[in-house]
Length: 105
Image 1 (cartoon, one colour):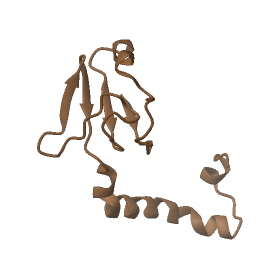
Image 2 (cartoon, one colour; image 1 turned 180 degrees about the horizontal axis):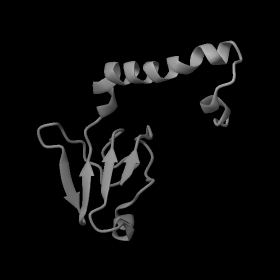
Image 3 (cartoon, one colour; image 1 turned 180 degrees about the vertical axis):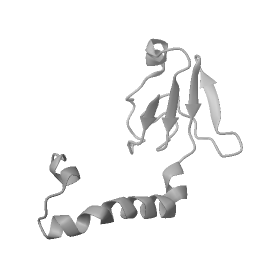
Image 4 (cartoon, one colour; image 1 turned 60 degrees about the vertical axis):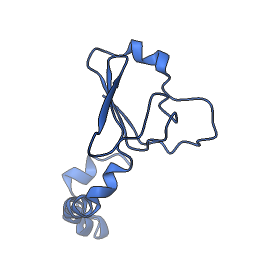
Protein backbone atom coordinates (compact mmCIF):
# COMPACT_ATOMS: atom_id res chain seq x y z
CA UNK A 1 0.00 0.00 0.00
CA UNK A 2 1.24 3.44 -0.92
CA UNK A 3 -0.35 6.51 0.64
CA UNK A 4 0.29 9.87 -0.99
CA UNK A 5 -0.38 13.05 0.96
CA UNK A 6 2.04 15.31 -0.91
CA UNK A 7 0.64 18.64 -2.05
CA UNK A 8 1.85 18.64 -5.66
CA UNK A 9 2.46 21.65 -7.85
CA UNK A 10 0.08 20.91 -10.71
CA UNK A 11 2.24 22.85 -13.15
CA UNK A 12 4.99 20.22 -12.80
CA UNK A 13 5.26 17.55 -15.50
CA UNK A 14 7.06 14.98 -13.35
CA UNK A 15 5.61 12.54 -10.79
CA UNK A 16 6.69 10.67 -7.67
CA UNK A 17 5.11 7.52 -9.11
CA UNK A 18 4.79 7.14 -12.88
CA UNK A 19 2.51 4.71 -14.67
CA UNK A 20 5.57 2.69 -15.65
CA UNK A 21 6.32 2.18 -11.93
CA UNK A 22 3.06 0.30 -11.40
CA UNK A 23 4.48 -2.85 -13.00
CA UNK A 24 7.08 -2.97 -10.20
CA UNK A 25 4.42 -3.14 -7.45
CA UNK A 26 3.23 -6.39 -5.94
CA UNK A 27 0.03 -7.98 -7.15
CA UNK A 28 -3.03 -6.49 -5.42
CA UNK A 29 -1.11 -3.40 -4.32
CA UNK A 30 -3.12 -0.29 -3.56
CA UNK A 31 -2.45 3.40 -3.95
CA UNK A 32 -4.34 5.77 -1.67
CA UNK A 33 -4.00 9.34 -2.86
CA UNK A 34 -5.51 11.78 -0.36
CA UNK A 35 -3.91 14.78 -2.01
CA UNK A 36 -5.16 13.74 -5.39
CA UNK A 37 -4.55 16.08 -8.24
CA UNK A 38 -5.14 14.47 -11.60
CA UNK A 39 -1.77 13.39 -13.02
CA UNK A 40 -0.06 15.00 -10.01
CA UNK A 41 2.36 13.26 -7.66
CA UNK A 42 0.89 9.92 -8.79
CA UNK A 43 0.62 9.97 -12.57
CA UNK A 44 -2.33 7.57 -12.62
CA UNK A 45 -4.47 9.47 -10.10
CA UNK A 46 -7.92 10.49 -11.21
CA UNK A 47 -9.91 12.15 -8.40
CA UNK A 48 -12.93 10.07 -7.36
CA UNK A 49 -15.87 10.45 -5.00
CA UNK A 50 -17.46 8.51 -2.16
CA UNK A 51 -20.03 7.15 -4.59
CA UNK A 52 -17.34 5.51 -6.74
CA UNK A 53 -14.06 5.78 -4.78
CA UNK A 54 -11.82 3.23 -6.52
CA UNK A 55 -10.56 2.24 -9.95
CA UNK A 56 -7.84 -0.05 -11.28
CA UNK A 57 -4.91 0.88 -13.52
CA UNK A 58 -2.59 -1.88 -14.73
CA UNK A 59 -3.79 -4.17 -11.94
CA UNK A 60 -3.22 -1.63 -9.15
CA UNK A 61 -6.21 -0.50 -7.11
CA UNK A 62 -6.42 3.27 -6.69
CA UNK A 63 -8.42 5.15 -4.04
CA UNK A 64 -8.43 8.86 -4.75
CA UNK A 65 -11.05 10.68 -2.71
CA UNK A 66 -9.57 14.13 -2.17
CA UNK A 67 -8.84 15.33 1.38
CA UNK A 68 -10.40 12.31 3.08
CA UNK A 69 -8.66 12.99 6.46
CA UNK A 70 -10.51 16.29 6.80
CA UNK A 71 -13.78 14.38 7.11
CA UNK A 72 -12.65 12.96 10.45
CA UNK A 73 -11.04 16.10 11.84
CA UNK A 74 -13.07 16.20 15.04
CA UNK A 75 -12.73 12.55 16.04
CA UNK A 76 -9.03 12.56 15.08
CA UNK A 77 -8.39 15.71 17.13
CA UNK A 78 -10.20 14.24 20.15
CA UNK A 79 -8.32 10.93 19.97
CA UNK A 80 -4.94 12.61 19.57
CA UNK A 81 -5.67 15.08 22.38
CA UNK A 82 -6.75 12.29 24.70
CA UNK A 83 -3.45 10.47 24.19
CA UNK A 84 -1.21 13.55 24.34
CA UNK A 85 -2.92 14.85 27.49
CA UNK A 86 -1.62 11.80 29.39
CA UNK A 87 1.91 13.17 29.07
CA UNK A 88 1.57 16.97 29.16
CA UNK A 89 1.82 17.34 32.95
CA UNK A 90 4.90 15.11 33.07
CA UNK A 91 6.51 17.13 30.30
CA UNK A 92 5.77 20.47 31.97
CA UNK A 93 6.92 19.29 35.39
CA UNK A 94 9.91 17.41 33.95
CA UNK A 95 8.77 14.18 35.63
CA UNK A 96 10.06 10.74 34.75
CA UNK A 97 7.82 9.01 32.24
CA UNK A 98 8.84 5.78 30.48
CA UNK A 99 6.94 6.66 27.31
CA UNK A 100 8.53 10.09 27.05
CA UNK A 101 11.97 8.70 27.84
CA UNK A 102 11.62 6.18 25.01
CA UNK A 103 10.82 8.95 22.54
CA UNK A 104 13.57 10.42 20.40
CA UNK A 105 13.07 14.12 19.80
